[in-house]
Length: 246
View (cartoon, rainbow, N blue to C red):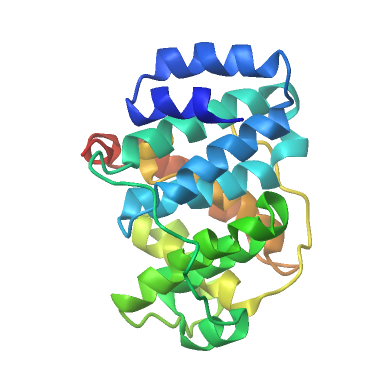
């Protein structure tokens, strides 16, 4: 179903992918296109910062879908670009048939930092991509656990947000907020706002991902100040786009 879309992504030919996507949408929905891009990102996953964030980005893109309206397609195409750019060119699709994955709660008891973020992402994507993709999704936190550096955030979310604002949305400070929210496992308390499509590799997709995470902030958290700082980083901080091209 998706093979005609994957060849241009493997070749990093975004013009060809856009043409293939237009043809695909003649007989399929935008949701089907998002599923195709999400599966590509998951299968192309490697434990690199850009590759991890490409998977987190497709999850976030689905979270903000209702707010995007007619621009959701543009966001899907940017997710496709990011997944294609961050894919290691020598990588092969993983063999998943015999992969045994521990129960979610066992993984959660061991995971911190990026391993926890990838578990949080995998658990959110399983109902969207289907149970057949469970092994592919849970392999991501399992791989992160193999090289995990312990990062359990103990400061309050308010303190972490203040640090984001003071650092003008630095990558490290924003990641700490993501980890804190994933640790808390709280319910969604708000509706994500639309995120203007942009080249996601510029900031490891953290602006898009931030739009998803603020909907999980507890009442009273400074979501507006947090997002403003992340926007400032995108506009004025260092660009990481060139590092996505292996």
